[in-house]
Image 1 (spheres, rainbow over the protein chains, first blue to last red):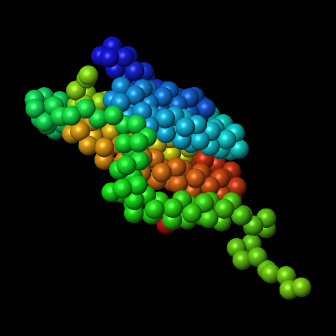
Image 2 (image 1 turned 90 degrees about the vertical axis):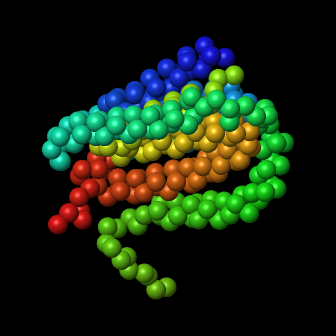
Image 3 (image 1 turned 90 degrees about the horizontal axis):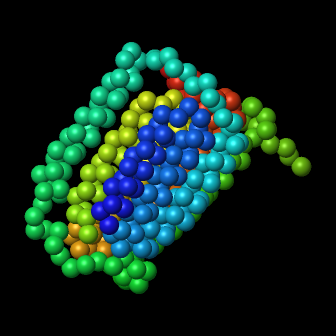
Length: 176
Length: 100
């Protein structure tokens, strides 16, 4: 258990770093895919089987396919501009995010990592039955409201994809 | 069984890497992938907290985040393609039409 966790923790962090540092967007996508699979492994380790399956199906399957499709459509732009509009933006960004991670870890170590008792409760098994009982019981209204979210997102994507061929801002309508 | 705090610590590190990616990169696609990484790390935090507290709600919240992230990716990539059709670039520094 512990070996698997630390192995895949390293894999996840390496994948995330590859995603941020790679020049080629395809390499970034592969790094993110590696991290997502590692996170699915962590879900399995915590007996969240259904969430792990959804992670692989939706993220590693659908979302990453969409990303790779868009990279294919847009083209790989390797010559990313290295000049900085804001002076010292990149070093400052790294310092700020390093500080963010340090603050979260320090704050968290007070409550999560060195916690003695509050994590010793009954075992949770995230099978489809258990998740569905909560999802279609207590949280059914939240679940139903995702219908509107997905419908609006689909309509919005279709509206954005319907791009007029002419570049005129307000195309003339032909009267038959 | 590993303490859920370790998963949360790992999620915090992944979140920071994603935030660094948003701030450092100029390619809109890679920035978008960094946002996905941040969403994923928050999902890991939700599930770990649910495991630690013995509540199924952590996994339910993670599932809702997955739904929202899928919708967000659909719309975001559609916007990106619409921008690319007009500008032929994915570099966010070149999208400065609103600059005075």
